[in-house]
Length: 150
Image 1 (cartoon, one colour):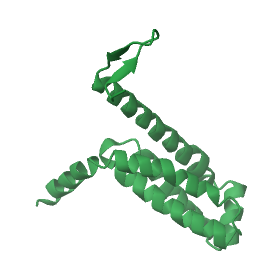
Image 2 (tube, rainbow, N blue to C red):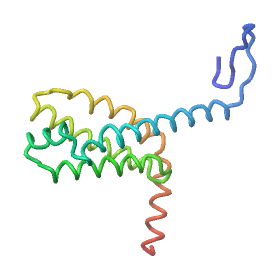
Image 3 (cartoon, helix red, strand yellow):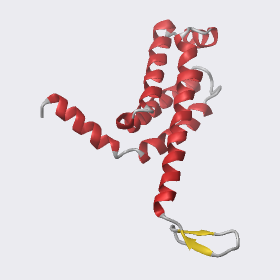
Image 4 (spheres, rainbow, N blue to C red):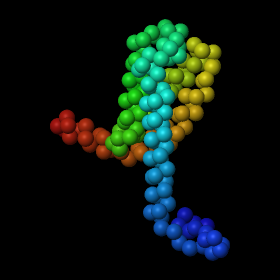
């Protein structure tokens, strides 16, 4: 079957508009972005920003204290919000991926690998979003250039 064909229940094949397939892919990608944004905002940033004991203990053990905890929390919340803003989606996914690389390094070096797979798992959907939304980078660059007067 080609990209533009779809089987009917009876087994015959008819042409399916490519736009319907593309729309489903865009909806699925948008759903993934919303899930990632909710995860980063609620499950990851919120405990840091409200200084939940579980987050505070981890940052104290790393030696980063509350300043490091709040900084990472703000970065995660900003990334979560930016995942939902079309012109910032790709950049946000790349930035959150970089944050996850740092989280992986910390998990391996400070916490002896405990929960080290979590940041690596999160990099996969973030990389998909960054790649799929890479076209927005040109829009962002145009906006920045327009604002700077170039």
